Image (cartoon, rainbow, N blue to C red; front, side, top):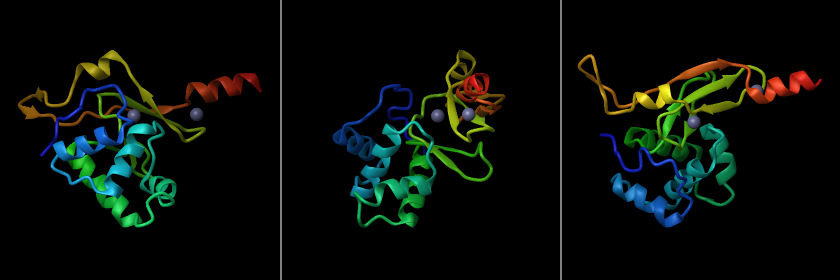
Length: 155
Ligand SMILES: [Zn+2]
Ligand SMILES: [Zn+2]
């Protein structure tokens, strides 16, 4: 079951009420941990891991456990509220931006960068390809990011 709510909305949803609304529309009760985790994902473009989300939120959500973070992210991914990225085989990363876009993993800094280009947006989710119904599209690129290339040329 994929929730289509806000799937192609490029704008960020920073407002707590909008976060709660997004959860309710996907049939998820908006508990404090869930609201905090979705809010975190929508406001951070760093493609965080479950550990990073737990580390950053445990101070403001005292009842939070790492297990809750893992279970919540799994639920969000199932409902289409976030993407789970396996570009880095060492760790699963999560993305609150669910519009169709690619990712580049930099071998120097280890950051995952968003790649927004027409060829990526052209094949959108919910399309049929060869009779198969597509619900997710992932484009993974590996290389050296523009920031690292600039730093290399300077030094
Ligand atoms: Zn880099
Ligand atoms: Zn992304």
